[in-house]
Amino acid sequence: MLNDNWDGIFRLPDFDLEEEKAMIPTEFEVQKETLTDNLSFIIQSNSSENVVFQLFDLMGNLIVSKEIKLKVGENSIQLGENIILNEGMYFYNFTNGKSINYFGRFLYIK
Image: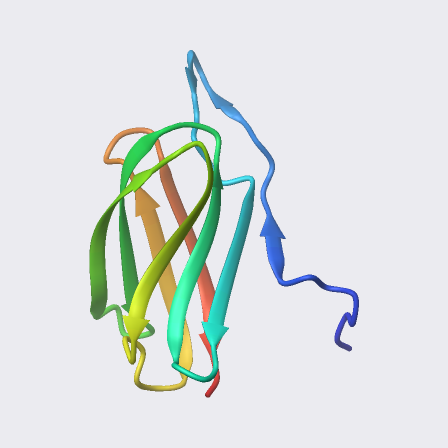
């Protein structure tokens, strides 16, 4: 059964890694603009951080890899038109190469 009250935002709890405060998104949203087929990710960041964003298909093939400078607050990552060509499950990864490594997935339906 679908939840008609869902606002489309995945909320993640804040947490600390030992002595270093982790920059983990507290809110995360995947948006598809149906008129242009643009795919964008919106991330709420607790700190300024350079991260690498990677997108993979279900077979593990790398679709896109992009270095991103996150700022404190809301960040929008635009992947451009027609990055995803086929319907299916996709996996994404945000990492700073050290303590931050966040994975997620979404189902793309045209």
